Each structure stands twice: as C-alpha cells, then as structure tokens.
Amino acid sequence: MTTKELIYKNAIELFSQYGYQNLGMRDLAKSAGIKASSIYNHYKSKEDILLDIANELVNELKENVYPLYKVTDLSPKEFFKNISLKTNQFFEQKHINTLTGILIPEEFSSQRLKKLLHEEFIVKPRTAYTYYFKSLMDKGLMRTEDPKLAAKMYHSFFVYHFYEKYLTNDPEGFLVKDESIFVNHIDLFMKYFDIK
Image 1 (tube, one colour):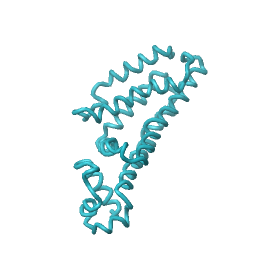
Image 2 (cartoon, helix red, strand yellow):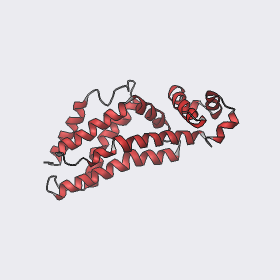
Image 3 (tube, helix red, strand yellow):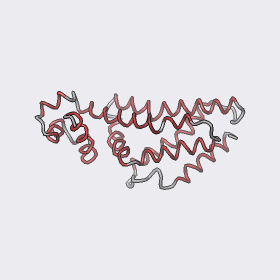
C-alpha cells in the first residue's frame, strides 16, 4: 500500500468515526506515520481527500447503479422496482454507507462536492428517467405530460428517503426495512400517469 493509499484509507476510517470537520491534515498525517508537512506531497488539502472519497462513490455508482437504467426490456413496473430496490440495497452496503455518511454532511461546505453530488444524485437519474418516460409516452404507454416534470415527481420520493436515512436516529438499513413503501410508490405513480 502506498503512503497516499494509507492516508486515504485512514481518512475514511477517521472521518467516519470523528467527522470530517473534527480532523485536520496533521491528524491524517499522524495516522499514516508521516510528518505533517509530508502529507501535502500526497494531498494538497483535506477537501481533495473528500473529493477522492466522492469519486470512489461515483465509480461504484457507475459500476453498480447506472447500468440498471439501461435494462429497458422489462415491464415498466419491473423496470422501476429493479432500479429502486437494487439502488436502495447498494446504498445500504457497509462501505457505501460509510462513504455516503462522510459525504452527505459536507455537501454544503464544499462547492466542488456539492456540484459533484448534484450531478450524480439528481441530474443523472432525472435525465435517465426523463428519457424513459418520454419513450413510454411516445409509445402510448404513459399519459402524455412533461416527461421532465414526471421524472422530478418520481425521483423526488427516492431523494427524500435517501436524505431521511441520514437525518434519522436509526439509519442502519433504513432504505431496505420496508420495501413495500417503494413498491406502493411505484404503483401510485403508475396509476397517476396511467402507465401500462
């Protein structure tokens, strides 16, 4: 393991235990067994470590979640269930939960992190859903409405639950404890938009 990898690994452990704001570069250097000044040979700032954590999460999303949006040979209900239930399971994995638990409290204190998370958590899913809803509308399988607004309506439910997980006193397993609420949301949405 390189020194940079050790700093990164220790940063995840320490940030998740003590909080990002409660640690400085000196603490991270000490945890890696290097001089405080030496850490800057590997990371220019603590925010750069935070962004590396965010990029690890993004890479995991690209590998495990984004491909789900391309599985369009399913019925609409199965398409929705496949994405929502597997995405919830993804975010409940121990390592992903740790990464996200570090990032969420810091998203408003770092403009670069805020921009990245907005793109990955909001814009990309909304764009994928907009495209999917437009294709259903074009085929006559969904009531014709503004597909982007429909995407916002649909996706907002999941964003709400995602953030509620990190605001609750009992976040462990929050997204998978009651999967029926997600299935009920899918049914209600499909009924409202007359999705066949």
